[in-house]
Length: 169
Image (cartoon, rainbow, N blue to C red; front, top):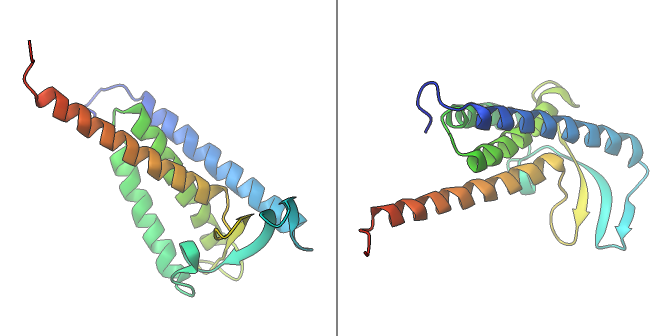
């Protein structure tokens, strides 16, 4: 964790990633709503398609109909991510947290501002690959970011374990 006055580059990079993910997510969702309303577009046969859908729940359509709860939960999680993010001095962790936070904010924007009404909005999904549930840029950022956070936490833990070992010389 960063002491006062520490290098703030990881935080600045993470915030740039958050902004980029939210912008890309919202731009692609706007495009999908405008262009995919007439039906799916095949990318690789039936395996990969651009297929418009609206998700009123969480991942895998869990908690459908609980959008206000999901929105409040996303705000709490975003606050916790910011709290952790400003305390990290690891560039890898900052990138991971930035991706997760950007994805969370992109989907939160849908829940707050999209139809049917404020705090009841449905998340726009449009990427369909195989049997995997339809997803969007925000979902991809969350998944990749979570993998990076786990990876860098595991590596830091391993390095910490090695530094606790006595020097074999």
